[in-house]
Amino acid sequence: MAVKGLWGSTDEFLNQCAQSGDSAYSAFRSLLERLEDPITRVEARIFLSDLQRRFDTKEASEQCLQTFHFQIQDVHLQQYEGYQSRKKLTMTVIPSIFIPEDWSFTFYEGLNRHPDSIFKDMTVVELGCGNGWISIAIAEKWSPLKVYGLDINPRAVKVSRINLYLNVLDENGQPIYDGEKKTLLDRVEFYESDLLGKCKRGISPLINYCALQGFVEDQFGLGLIARAVEEGISVIKPMGIMIFNMGGRPGQGAADTDISALVEIEKNSPHRFEFFMGLSGDQPICARTAWAYGKAGGRISHALSVYSCQLRQPNQVKIIFEFLKNGFHDISSSLDLYFEDDSVAAEKIPFLVYLASVLKKNSFFPYEPPAGSKQFRNLIAGFMRTYHHIPLDANLVTMVLVYLFY
Ligand SMILES: C[S@@+](CC[C@H](N)C(=O)[O-])C[C@H]1O[C@@H](n2cnc3c(N)ncnc32)[C@H](O)[C@@H]1O
Image (cartoon, rainbow, N blue to C red; front, top):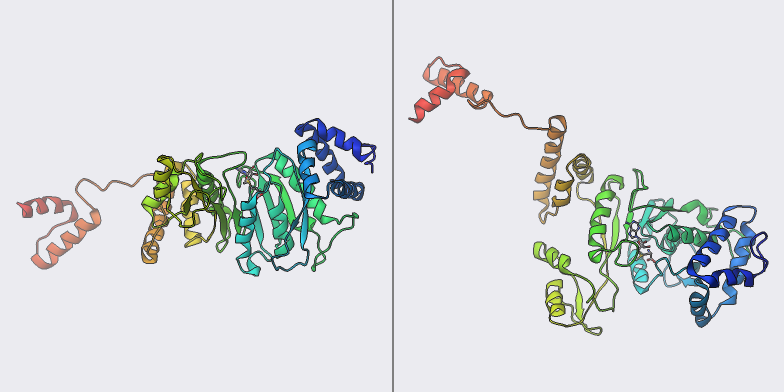
């Protein structure tokens, strides 16, 4: 099988891939150009089917990754119901991007626990889309209006686009239409982006997916998650949902990971993270205990949790963060809008909105005159005139008060 103007045969393509990971990536980039052009798209898609067939057992596919620095595999979705009937998707990976692990599937399972209507006709953003399989699976299963898959790694974005075409057309290069006569090309777009840098306003549910592995790493991805949530506040629709993965690689020891940030969260909130002693422990322990156990030489493993949340009083919270964007960064990173009690939130959030609106007009609070509030002095003077027949005006009130005090 050949691709006109690129490779005379599949072997020629494989020879290029075998040279290095970079060579394989550049071969796939050339293929992507062919996939993007409607004239050469079908030929390029059939070429990929042929490649996949060459490595169609699990062992051969693993070997292909080792030798030729790429892998094309089917991802089976049949355990989940959805709007569409497709049971499998086809996905490529290369070594320089994140290769889906068990816990990616845990995240997808977490998404599946939401009602089927969750993404229907919505605009969805997946942060840190890797090879794009989750964005494509969301589009396939829940028929959203649009899914934007974003990743900071430019190679991940290119591979995601290849994966999109792999699933827009079938093995014979024929377009696959859904019940609304659309293809995945109508529903999914991939872009390079540092978190939500690429996004504009008006987004609905948001998948905030940051993790330990990948381009940027930090403690459990918490810093990234915090940044993503903050960026998400301005773009998310009022009733939009943020869903995120917290934890790490389930089953693996967490000895290489500093969990002190999680211990801090536990100190300041009722939340308890789940860790386990060793690989087979079945009794969960909290981050604080796990931290102490790890320090004493024990091996801990951790659970993966998928959290969903909505903004409390979204329009008001948006106003607060919009205001803080302009020169109040330190405040926004230390602002704690966690309230256990709804009634406290109902009082404090509008107060902060009011404060923001006052500070927006004046960057300072005017000092009262040293003699005290004019309005208050008027009231005192009026009281003295009415009830004590003392002819005072506001200017004399400080002295009178001093006099009364003595
Ligand atoms: C653990 S992988 C998950 C990939 C994919 N969602 C999956 O489950 O297979 C995390 C991804 O986040 C990306 N990433 C890390 N920091 C990012 C940032 N600041 N902005 C966008 N993407 C980021 C990484 O490049 C990586 O592809």
